[in-house]
Length: 147
Image 1 (tube, rainbow, N blue to C red):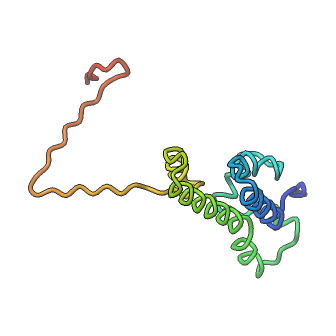
Image 2 (cartoon, rainbow, N blue to C red; image 1 turned 180 degrees about the vertical axis):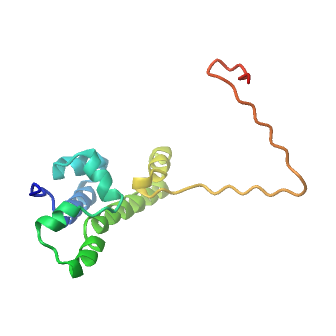
């Protein structure tokens, strides 16, 4: 018999709501960190990674005798929804902070992290004609590698 899970999807959703409320009321960026999420839920980084990856905790489903019919619904509305809400909130915070002009480089950096929105710069290179690409592979000392 598997050990009972400490954290249910409802608890994750509750903690995400608390984190959003904490940030909204006092603006403390620490409230939005993964460390704070792990601390409040008393979980490991590995467990939090599973939540971000959208993996359902199979043992939790088994421990609570979730029926086969309800499993898909449970998986789709479990940990992932709360985690996605946290990512969306972080992304919105980054956008707001970048537009207010406070510490813009730090907020731009944060916004490019996957768990803070994962924004990407799009660079388009338009070229007419041919292009040449030269590749030089070197070792740690900067000298070209020999065959």
